[in-house]
Every structure is written in structure tokens, then in C-alpha cells.
Length: 90
Image 1 (cartoon, rainbow, N blue to C red):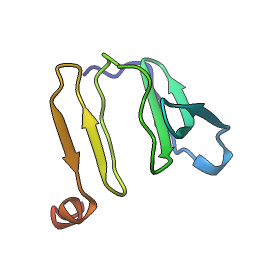
Image 2 (tube, one colour):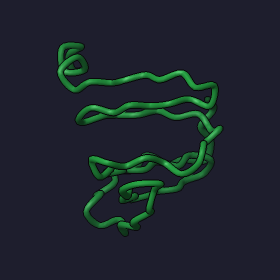
Image 3 (cartoon, rainbow, N blue to C red):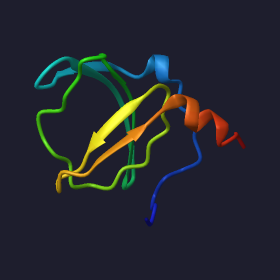
């Protein structure tokens, strides 16, 4: 990943517009910041949320809670909050 034209900044997420997107079931609320070639989103998923499309772009995720990710090839990966918190913090 090469990040270009992105100045040092801090994001106050409560000041970024929240936009709700429906999924196949449930919905996701996105707060999106775009600078240079970098796009960062704070996303809140409803418990029953299922995405209605695939995203081929790479992802970096900071998770709070359990998330099941299904990749385009059918592979399923579950991230569980209890396991993530044991990894420690920086």
C-alpha cells in the first residue's frame, strides 16, 4: 500500500456525516473521510447486516465486536472480540 498526498490529520468522527446503506438484510452506517488516495470509514453494522455486494479493494479493519467476513471465493473468516482483545494493544 502506498499512501500519497495525505497530510497529518486527526478525524473527529462525530463531525463526519453519517450515511445509512441497506444490505441484503440490516444496514450499515458509514462515516467516510477521503484524503489523497486514502479512504477511511468508521462503519457501524446492525446485528443482522449482510452486504449486498463484493468489494475487490483491499481492506484494513479495526474491529469492535464479532464480525463474519465471507470472501469472494466463499472462504469465511470470523473475527471475535474476545480473541482480538487478547492480542493486546499498542
